[in-house]
Length: 466
Ligand code: FAD
Image 1 (cartoon, rainbow, N blue to C red):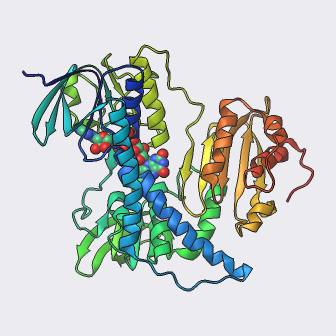
Image 2 (cartoon, protein in one colour; image 1 turned 90 degrees about the vertical axis):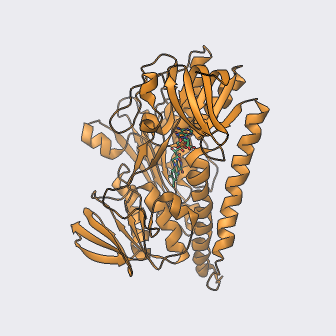
């Protein structure tokens, strides 16, 4: 068979994992080809994930924030929303970033091939491009084909009123009544946006809490706020059936909150499925499990020695910052450097209002596994800064090892929790203890000083607050 291109490294998929791996390999002197089926680089995160969602969430956050100025004597009228402009504004942010990636690829002489790639052997990939099939021969391959929204069999997914996260981000309209199926991060972030834009929101979640994985004391602060904003939050409830009718999407619930309701639109955000089954991995001998995940070792190697995999397709938390770090490991191992993916923690952030962020050991996990811990909690109601921004619902919590006093985990709820958690992640990676954190001089008045204060609370050395 003909080979059109020969390269040292081929990267399959140009999401945060793929483009990072391609750029790192090129920087280390490798000849790199990057395959992407879509017109733009950046994958889910830049095109239909992290970036557009945060652009919309920022807008929603300010729309909510101005309402808090009433107590300072400032009031605004009802906001006028031009949805076309909002969509264009969000698309502009995305275009700027994806365009930047194309320029960065060019700078590094990473050759981008646009089309769907599939393995033909452990050293060949065939790409279906607009101009026809292109055969690429490679020494090393990094699979970074990512994941797609999970669909539920029997739900009318073909009806445009039943949305996945990509549809919801497209912002076609603001439905009067909207159901969010799945109380995880993605569902609740989109609920935040649509609720602020004026939709009446119901959320249905199978488990007994929103944001499964986060500690209840953090989630409770969010719940307190959204219970006022949303119509119903149905926990421990299942969608038994969903059908398209002329009046709307009819949904039958069973479990703790049974019943039947009709919605203008439904967002299904029940998880994501890895794309491992879509690349003919068996032609290369790469093992893919029944869900579509590809197993790798700490060097990101699959069972085939010259083939690596990174990002959502290898499992673990499906997060962009995990994908980029794995990407660097794979590229470096290929270049002969001693790299290993061995983080102490991968932080999680829900960019809801308020934000929730956590890292390392959670209290839930500690209790489940019988891990002893000491806790320092600083309620934001005692923070001058939090009061000044009219947000006293927040909480900063640190968990420590009772013996060594080293930090084990942290959880923060409140505006900017996602920015604040970084310090705790660094503390964990550096092996910082209670005193290290408590003795670090944090600027006053900031939300960030709640981390130092939480450590002092645990240490018993707190003298004054505010
Ligand atoms: P992807 O980003 O999925 O990229 C894979 C790429 O491979 C895609 O571009 C795809 O087209 C391409 N591809 C697949 N198969 C082929 C093939 N056969 N041939 C050619 N190309 C192929 N994570 C965060 O960390 N923070 C957030 O705030 C955040 N928000 C999110 C919000 C939403 C709504 C969603 C859906 C996700 C969010 N995520 C967030 C998750 C994040 O987007 C993913 O973890 C991340 O994009 C995974 O990167 P990846 O490189 O593994 O794969």
